[in-house]
Image (cartoon, rainbow, N blue to C red; front, side, top):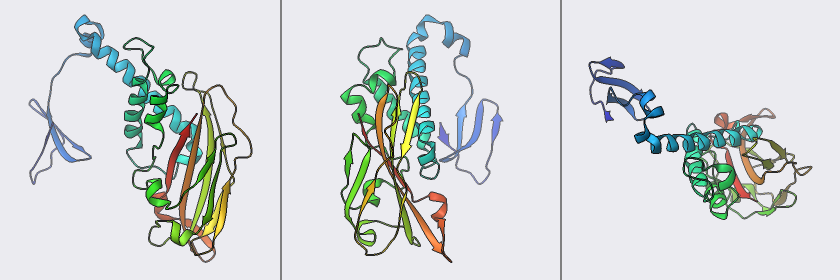
Length: 249
């Protein structure tokens, strides 16, 4: 793959070259390659098929997690979250040391310490990493899913975007079984605060514990708003909102 440097921008196929627009600009690649039928049946492509199967599992697992937390994720994600999460899920899959090559999967990998470690701390909005937004400590109660921030001063303990007047904080407690796809997400009541120098203790407690036979996942979300005439509006459609996976049990 090569970048096209020209005042003329081309999209389409010309002889053996294909021109297209990607995230990095206008790109060009050669036509051709191995046929899908050969990859599917030729013994020499056995490793390719195994890699493809495992990659598919990682992609599907990422999709399951995103769907499971859709209520939190809708306004707290970047435009590359799908590919970034698939990459991380591939590392989780690699932690599966039980299944044979080609059958390693996230459902097994996530049960291992290394698999959990690969996913813990994932930020769904790379443009708003939680540790860069929330400039103070918090505690997590893994039994109840409660997140607590003691002596929280919004104007001092936040790296806030320009124009923000208020913020909302929410915790999420998820049970997700990657093998079956079953999931149950319980979120805490939203705590909304003005961004000023008032000190308070923020307690985010989900009203119940999610049910299921999968792993427990814990989340913290911070969303920013601008108040105009007593109405709060999402700041830049949530571009500055942070959502992080805090822990997995």
